[in-house]
Structures are given as structure tokens and as C-alpha cells.
Image (cartoon, rainbow, N blue to C red; front, side, top):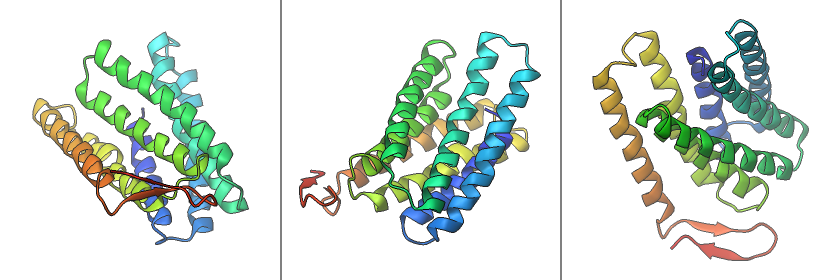
Amino acid sequence: MSFVGLFLSGAVLFLNGLMLLGKADGKAVGYFNLFVGVIQIINPFYLIMTSSQSNWDLYNNAAIFLFGLTYLYVGVTSVKGLQGSGLGWFSLWVAIIAVVYTIISVVVFNDIVNALTWGLWAFLWSLFFLTGSLKLKIDAYVGIVAIVLSWVTLTIPAMLYFLGVWNTPAVQQIWTWVLTLSIAFFVVSLLSPKLSFKKEKSGQEVQAV
């Protein structure tokens, strides 16, 4: 994906995380989602038209649409006050695609950092499915995951790329550990006795442990 796109996505995901934590107005954040979503739709169209049209060019540029469409969907849902079930099922579809990108990163490109990144994005989209379609009350947890991923998978990698050091072996090794520790943090948080999964309107509670 374009690193400019990663940079903008970091801002959106950070604000979305704050929105889920109740720290930012949903409608205001929704408009920002729409703004970046439009950019993330125009950008891949341009990249595809100017590319060699090879299968891997299309593969890489198509990934940007996953983010652009998600931001547009979140933006419309937030601004219009729509139910999130449609967004949730869309997020499940995107999560499955993200798992495929994770596997391809390992099998074809032997890129561990990219594989970990896509795996974490698949996890986040799966959480959006759980909150949007299954109506589990885990907004606080999802908000924390979104904020952490906005920095470790988007904003900071983009900044390191702008500085010309992202693809160096040392940075790649460090970032493998950063992403691994992020996964460990999410698992520990998920298994915390303080976290419970509650389903809306049903009164049913499924404990995380």
C-alpha cells in the first residue's frame, strides 16, 4: 500500500479508537472518515491506471480499497446514525481477505513484518464484526486495539519510510518484536478478568476467561 495512505489511515484509526472509547464525537469523526475514505478510493484507481497492470500491482493496489471502503462505510454509518450490522458483515469479509494477505506475505514474499501487520488488521476487522453484527459490548477493548494499531502498523511505519529507514534490516527486526509484543498485549488484555463480552439487548454475558 502507498505509505501516504498508511499515514492518513493512521490518523483515521486513531480517531476511530478515541470515538469507541467515548473520547471523540462520532459524527465529527465520521466526517473525517469520509474525507480520507474518498482519498483512499481515488488513490488506488490512479495507481492502477499508472501501473504495469501486472497481477501483483493489482494485488497491492487492491488492498487500499479495503481501507477506503471501510472508512467510507464507517463515515456514512456515523454521520447518518445507521445501525452497524451492515458494516460488521462487511468487516468480516475484509477480515477474511486480510487473512489471505497474511498468508501470501509469508508464503510468497517471506515478509514477516507484513504478515504480522496484515494479521493484526484481520484481528481488528474481526472485532468490528463482533461489535457491529454480533452486538458484543467490547467497544473499549476495540478502541484500545485501534489506537495501538494506528501507531504500530500505520503512522510510525509510514514516518520511518519517509525518513528512508523502514526497509533496513535493523528496523525490520525491531518492528517484528514491536508487532509481536502488541499481539501479546492484546491477548493479555483479552484474557483479563475485568473484560467481559456482553451481547446487546439479550442480557447474555460471555466471559473472556
